[in-house]
Length: 132
Image 1 (cartoon, rainbow, N blue to C red):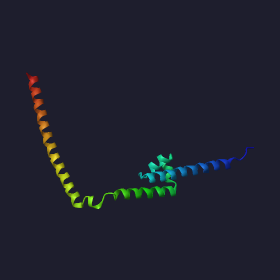
Image 2 (image 1 turned 180 degrees about the vertical axis):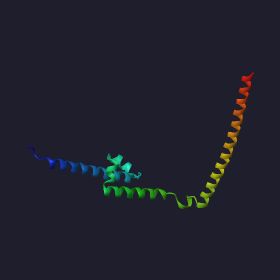
Image 3 (image 1 turned 30 degrees about the vertical axis):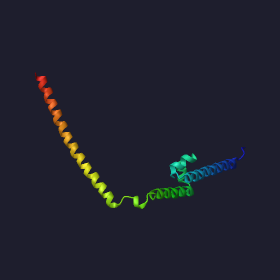
Image 4 (image 1 turned 45 degrees about the horizontal axis):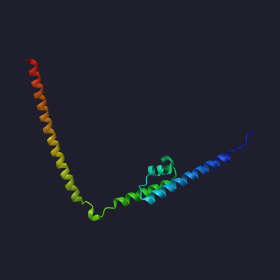
């Protein structure tokens, strides 16, 4: 009869789990200290773990989501209020872009018509040349 070695397997799995958690937590701290964007992908790459594993760790998942939200809040607020575009300014830019799009659409239509005429004339001259 064989000896029961399950306790060794369980201990090894537990140790591997704790090592993986430590790598993920260290990667989180390193990325946060560096001011890098925190996402599941960046943490997974830095810790050499899978993203799916990160998603099933409730405390690590919560921390990634918290740091990710904090990073994007900070980057969105980094432009001083006086330098941000006003609603009126954005509307004017949109109107200008729409006007430019209309001009380009008109020009494209005119150029297509000119091309069609030129191709028609070229076809007619080819037919006339072949008849001679």
